Image 1 (cartoon, rainbow, N blue to C red):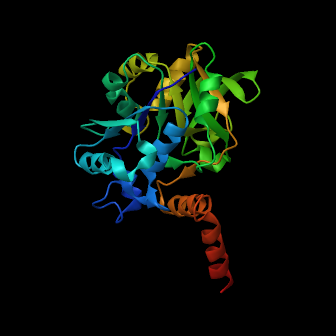
Image 2 (cartoon, helix red, strand yellow):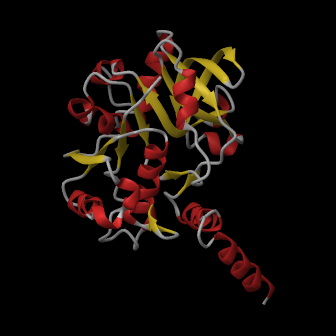
Image 3 (cartoon, helix red, strand yellow):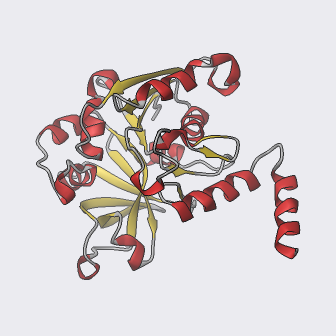
Length: 272
């Protein structure tokens, strides 16, 4: 399946990263040599995306737009349309995706959360497209420890479709430890068919009083319209301090221009 459009929810203010995010949008915090959201956009572009829709808030959105307007300074963005839509009120990840409905239209689309990064030599989006079969939604999952699963969306898996691909029969957001349905935590990378918008329209506020994307996945799974790709790729979570530091070191170490130099520098620091 060819997927040409990606939606990136980037309206979060990053309360767990203050004071760094007092005035700077969380998505513009620099990881190695570029903002986290640029890493995410470049990942989408590497997978064949030619149009990126960013969901931003009314305050910080202009700063994110300005970053991507610097076309001559972002050579990897040549030929890619990057535009934004405004989420007037933060009502959850599911609501952020729904805000992008008009911009996406009647097309399959990726969703990439701006907090979550992968190393630049890795890819998960093509695997989602390959798993979509005749046109069902696909979520990226990874086997995770139980203590991590309670802070994630977790799928209820059905039968194996093929190696590394499962049917999804349900999903739950941040389950209590005694109600975790599987070891498969959702990892911030999705491929949705446009039917997800109709599903989101009917979703009531769930965990935390927000419209949860996980609840839409649960509904799609109940209809036999969702699969899961089980990845071994590490997803780097920049949404909290320890994860942000880990992501910074990981992305710098994998950098094609100065990765070797960076790793040598870190070895020297650790032996001092």
